[in-house]
Image 1 (cartoon, rainbow, N blue to C red):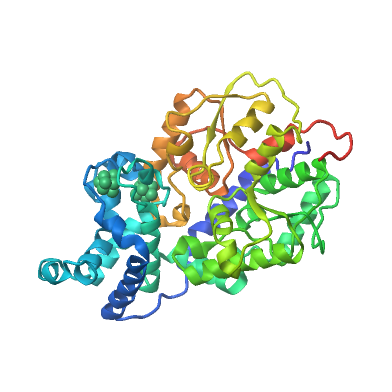
Image 2 (cartoon, rainbow, N blue to C red):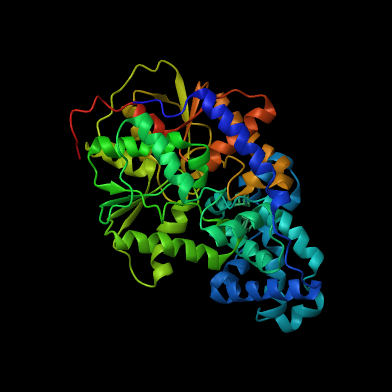
Length: 458
Ligand code: SF4
Ligand code: SF4
């Protein structure tokens, strides 16, 4: 395997990228000028539509057992009751009680109407104090999908013009350009050229037909090209008929993270139509947690019909190939322990657990599970776009400390991750806390264990 990015290159890129991320707040376009009343009525319209679509029954189901509090990184790390997951839905519940409940005629005089101050408080809870990780969902005996309802909160706040500045910048950029962090087509093609030089083969771009469409992200283009390099090197090794597309390479979807449903659908549709155009049977999304659910569960809806392709994450695609014997990796002697982080959207939401473990086993690693793992794994602390929000900094560190504490307790000498946002949050957390745990991309790890190529194998 070729070293796609040296440690020094990675450190330089990280410093540059971190500086860019920290300037997003100042670069954000001015927020929409709305009166307090307009903000409240826009937010309430979003709540009422969601409540009509089935969320109302879930709000009524809570038995106030408190189990969700003990599942949430932010409650556990602060013991502040306002971070109890179900509390994050109080505003929506008030709208329900006043406007839709069968007892609304009785409750209305006793339940406060929504104010703009409530919306500001909810902004902190929905954007800065929740990564929509879904861990609370797993323990709720009433089966309440708190994370999805926090997504409704984000949509309500976006409509009310109260999206955090950083996400507003990202949404504006992706609305205008389709991609993020200035990773336009020229930069994408430039980075592909750099990868080609390092890898020593031509990477297929813009094939008219291909079985597999590989997607990358602005984060990987700038910072984690080892992940893209690992994926293309492994696909090449396997002899897969694949391509990247210069008009559909961005997997990130800040519509999904910012609560902008129209943008979320538009971005998903773009990837979906491109995959259909080239006859792809599989779309491999990058090591990017949220790009996976956005496409896997949004593709058919975005075009209004079933789609003729599967959506896989990098670790899922290659892990299945290992499990089915289609991809042989060369086990090396790794005497120490490694830990694996299950990204929330890939693991808990997508059920991808066995595949990354199969990869690491085939590479010869001794993987020790963290105290929480698989379905109940703790979030890295920076998911759902939080890793970019400066005002979430303190809470991000709370989440980071919990997860990194578990990782360190395994005695691991390195951490394997298959999500760029998790990786970014771990890297920033390490710098701020003075920790030193090396963090590696699973895609790069796979490529580092490819046997000498004896010809294309599929
Ligand atoms: S989704 Fe995660 S971060 Fe949000 S309330 Fe639930 S456990 Fe906490
Ligand atoms: S775990 Fe479920 S039922 Fe219990 S308090 Fe939380 S939301 Fe309510």
